[in-house]
Image (cartoon, rainbow, N blue to C red; front, side):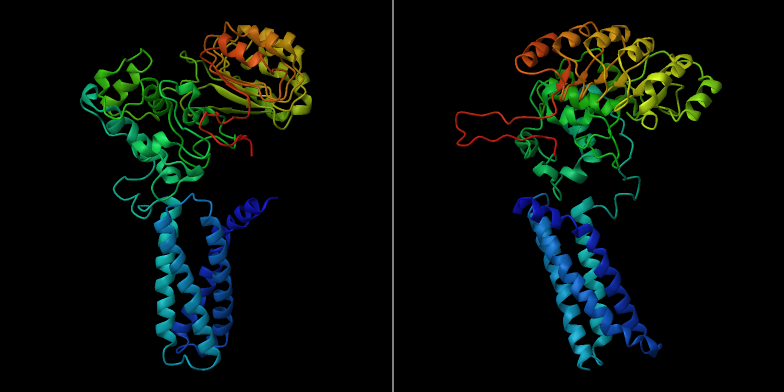
Length: 467
């Protein structure tokens, strides 16, 4: 581990450690304030002040190391740091004065000062982590999940100001705004968006499929690089569509909607914005257009007994997401249990299972599948060709398999396919260039990215996005 990595590792303990001195010092202050009424509390006060001061000092050190990452607003960090140092220093002074019996007259006043410092320091820390308005964000419907305000005349709206920026504000500013810049990326202004972050440019004008911003949004939720993090509110399909369309039209910051080309896919989204319907209630683009009846209860029971997890993809549909995460070693023999549910299954996770080409013959019957995960399985090019029947397939994960360019060629007729994960497969060398020509509208994820080398560069820099 390099020194820089060690510093970063230690600094990340700050959010965990900082609650310890807060609790200890709050208890010390309360004991001090009530010591006159309850004398038995007095002996504990110096002990609490000592350990509160020591843990506060450690918090200052870890906080400083965390600030070196550069992910936070420098001015706000400085205020937070000095308030933290003041809290630790006054706690230590009050401890020494208490031990020397010099604090009797001013003990309660000192405790009150520490309480005020804790509140100020805590507020500044919360502003760094959650944004300056984190205390008031939920008042008056201002929370992260607020609805999109209707735009009476969507054609006259400025695409960035009236549509794109509100999406970024609701879903991205908490990590990429003025207070916090995760990955050194800010998305709260034109200059900042175009500048990008430590991984390079966030958007490629006119090329949403090549833009890191869009690619990260489309990664599986459990992927470490997915944005926003899975514990944060996610962008709806409509919101992702708006960002993709904005980038595809040249990511103008001044043009009105009516000045931009409007493909058929974006028109329903614009209509939803004009009527005030949230993108969260729009139909999921990863689900088939036609609805299906309820799944057979007997078939679901058999899956549960076999350790196979099957859950609805949402409360408004009968479509299912099925995972073999707990039955991967028996996937080959159990996959036949899915046949009675072939109309309902749209998402199927078989990663790290023993499924092989024979099993793919069964899966090929599930024509409603839109997402299929086969990472680290024994499938080959021959088996892959059987998936040509999955006309609605959008996402296919083949990470860690033996498939090659030859096998992938059989999937060219899948017009709905938009993402292929091909990290650690048999695809390599010149095959990548040919695949990009064969799949011009598909994101081919190789699991790593290389920073482009410009003539003005003075050193070679490469970055693997798999930390």
